[in-house]
Length: 152
Image (cartoon, rainbow, N blue to C red; front, side, top):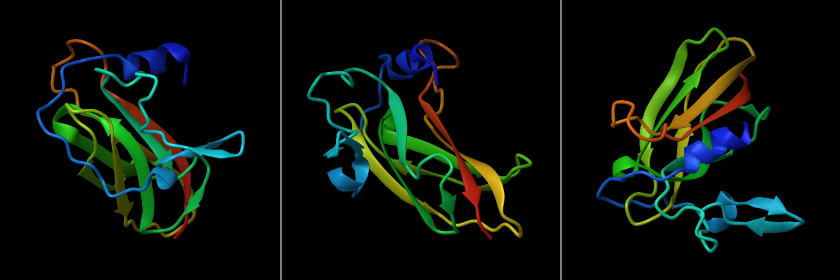
């Protein structure tokens, strides 16, 4: 992902009116930086002020997953709504749904599990995103795309 793409994803916009936080611990939300756990939803530096975004932090790109795998992340989206879909190698939608994350009051963690069925191991893609409710006005909605190895 380019710096410009990330900048646009994290750029501001008007957000919805509710906040719903997922039950994900800060440790589950973070990543290791120089051997220490970081909280992806931390906003101590103000980077997420007035910004709409969706950042999926797990599973990691290239990870081998099985049906029922857990997805974690952080978001600040319109009405706290986070959409997701899992795509097979041929682009077919294997599963889709939505969850809640952060909203108008700030960033919030999200977590959900994905059941799916495939008959052969294959590379698929998980898309976690915010829908564009503005009909193209303003900044593009946040989106994370993660390539995964889907196991039967």
